[in-house]
Image (cartoon, rainbow, N blue to C red; front, side):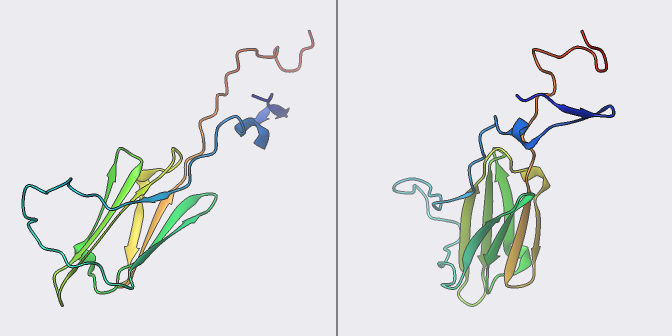
Length: 153
């Protein structure tokens, strides 16, 4: 790890200090889950497929991941967000009106996604989900530390 730059008692690290950590994997939309071959039971609700014009878009910025999910025909109280193993966000939407519909996607994130701080808003058609990104951990204590500041020795 590069040495810290000091100025007036304040320790700062250059961007190179963080380069030793591997880049996080980009978000991945996983295939819809299934309950295995030959499901041993009939589903409680028989779901129609999602509307043809529903989709999901993933954007990555320096401070957060943004998911835009188009869910026409769904209502707010029919949408569920859940996290699994702090790495997977599960988005499920169900509608029982006008023939119904079922939308389900799982999105896998790298180590930098803070799935505890997920925020979402729904305007009747677009579900906007924001997942903050964490900075990689930094080891401030080095094994070979320079001597006290201001002393030569």
